[in-house]
Image (tube, rainbow, N blue to C red; front, side, top):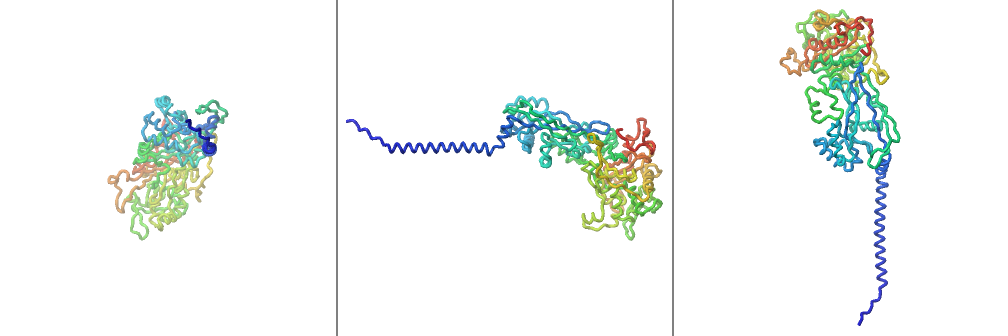
Length: 630
């Protein structure tokens, strides 16, 4: 018997249909929700990124870095120029997994692991989106070829040609011209990012840093149309960059070379300047270093070798070296003593070989232990008699001494465009109270009279103080820049001249300085005897370690670096000053025997012609005092 056909359950079918509709609706709503969320994420959360990416596929604004200004010496010879170099850049937004790209790059070029870490630090430095970041400089032909062959493994990596700073004379002007280096994170926070777009170097030291604004120039821009791969299709608009201004310095390459040869590899400093203009003619700090090492990034080991060297080649002795001036300041002290009325040109002091304060047993020794007998001011200068200046300092007192010596630039930054200069130290009662919370003692005044004690000066300050002696108190601040672009350098912060109640005081002190080299008993008579012109100068010896009361200085018992520093300052010709030279030789011991010959060699290089005779323009007092572009 056939089975009965079951009746259709319409209610059940309706329930299934409703369930399917609900499930389908929920799935549709979920998919719509996911789509909306994705759209929100792409168009709202990542709007800026994709907007920039989309625009970059069509129109891209590329900065055009300006060409850095060149630096010349006074005769137009290049001291700092720009030379073409190939560098490797990475654009992070085009590289995808840029860390993997860096790994591949290190493998392709067989670079050490520390380079990989340095690359990542450079890529992570703050910069604008889609701006290429240079990570490796001065590529050779083999490296360029390896990058080209492996380009498929290195998305976002490009070889770019650019101009890189170069110093053709290497270490000879490292401490004056300075150097440029890569912009670091701290500098990024202070510079204008628009002004430095596309520029990766900035002045770090010396003239390169002081005149950064003039040397840098102004950035240009290029609006280009690109495809999705970033290839430039055409240039839509271009604004040319403004190149940096060239600098002409007062330094003279030949005189710099002569000063270095005169120093003969010894640790020390030489400063030469024109007293009538304040122009620095030579500025030597030895030992020195090659600034080219710092332009594209110096290696860790190379930097450690320079930093940790016992000879301190990175240390600018001319501007930052602080040394007791010793007897080099005695002519300035004599002028201060005359002006204050403490002494007169005829004042005499009896020197038994030492000096004692009233009611004090301590003896302040003269360098000549047997004494010089009766000593007047001129003899005190040319014999470098300590006893005379001990007595004068005690009579002047610290307050007047501080007042007058500050006028000569001691304890002050004297230069215009050397921002690394130390102010040195011209001590006072107030300074000692603030520094040590102690009163000032008479014995400290006594030794200050011969340039010892707390007093600290730089070779540049000694050169400027000597220039004031040569110009009879006319303040013309030292500077390196002769011309900036087409404009001469201008001194916006002049110092007040030293006005004396009797101008003859300058003559008395200058006569003493001449006698140092040209009097039969002058301390530097041997040097003066070999000169075809008259020199006014003063020797000095600066103690490095103290000598106990009653003991004699014995260099043979001292470590070489504990021996006295040798100093000498002078100007020439004495009757028509054209050049001032200050020399400091570390641990040289004898100012007259070691530093004075260096001074004369530098003066000869500037003043004498090829036949060894004084140049005609310097022969008489009526000759022009300002010499330009020799």
